[in-house]
Length: 314
Image 1 (tube, rainbow, N blue to C red):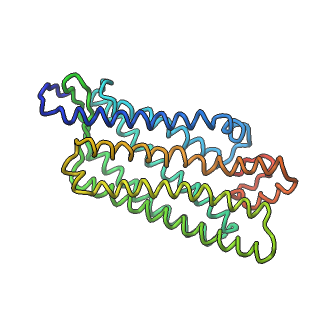
Image 2: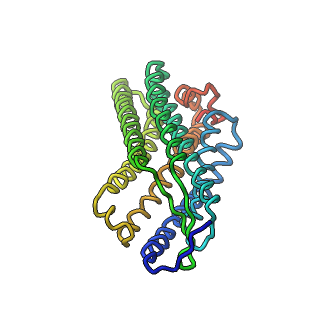
Image 3: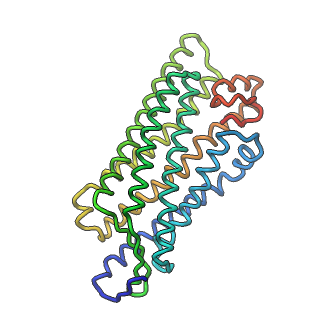
């Protein structure tokens, strides 16, 4: 049963929710715009190619992102009525989406690093061990959070609000999961930079290069952009620990800060995440068209053992 109140003491919350809704709608529009912008590439480079693990991972991140953005709207827009049960269901879907998408992005990163390290078995085992430890912890924290978190629907002065009530200790556990995610991304970036520099030096020493050098450049380009976006989101997350934000939760400045955090988070995960795959597939297709040497890409196209001409190995 929603709590109904016209008490003026709720007005700061109402105003904060209204400001936050503008940013959430902007984030939703950004995700949808990127999907529309890359739809032609997606049809050509994903749907019309032979299906593989990377195809499944790309489509999962892309369309889970759209679902996540859509169900975030009822939480944020105060003119959309929701009940306690609906709020609970939407919250669970959002949490489960986060639990699924992060491992998918990790698998994509493992595949890229495994390819860059020329199929090194030791590197693959090392990455898988870290991946399992991190994601098992995340899964346990999510299960605990879902069990000890309640949702409450409010009708305040004619507006609809979804209040999330966390049990003690849940915010701390969520912070730990984010710290582990930072460690993973920093490790992946360091490994990518190290092997890329090593390969570039070897190619220069032997006067080689060409398509392999270009491929590493493309891999690093998208990796660096993705990592930079992750750093930006992490800085915003760390900023949430500021006493200024915690003591003045409903101020205009705080809501703008949280709004930009929402936008950057959705862009980093659901826009730049799929482009980790789409970008290298576009490069593969261009090489196939422009060069007879395209088959040499097979050895680093995520080890899917598919001929380069299908462009389905990434």
